[in-house]
Image 1 (cartoon, rainbow, N blue to C red):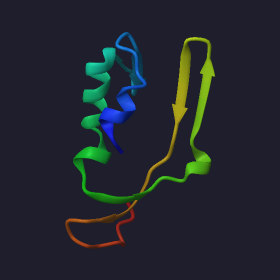
Image 2 (cartoon, rainbow, N blue to C red):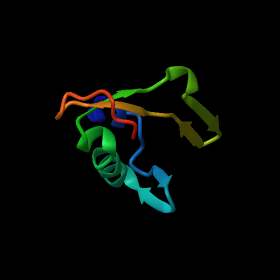
Image 3 (cartoon, one colour):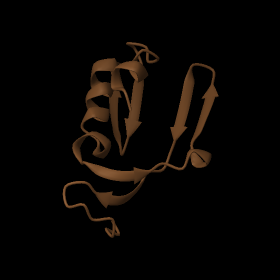
Image 4 (cartoon, helix red, strand yellow):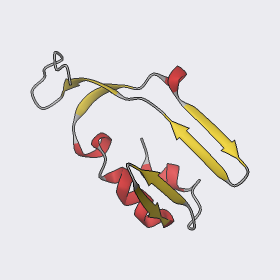
Length: 82
């Protein structure tokens, strides 16, 4: 996932809510994503695209996706149930 490419789509005035916290502006939103599991853990994950949805309502959009971790690159194990 290219953070730079994805953030070309986000306005500088955008807001993102996750787990009760609101991140305002592209810098805060970028920091949120760069601190997320996808960027901080070297894991092998499956992201079933058929479950991803984006709903656009006027000037708002809602994103839903699932990420299933199935292995750990550091250990080479693919039996991690987490």
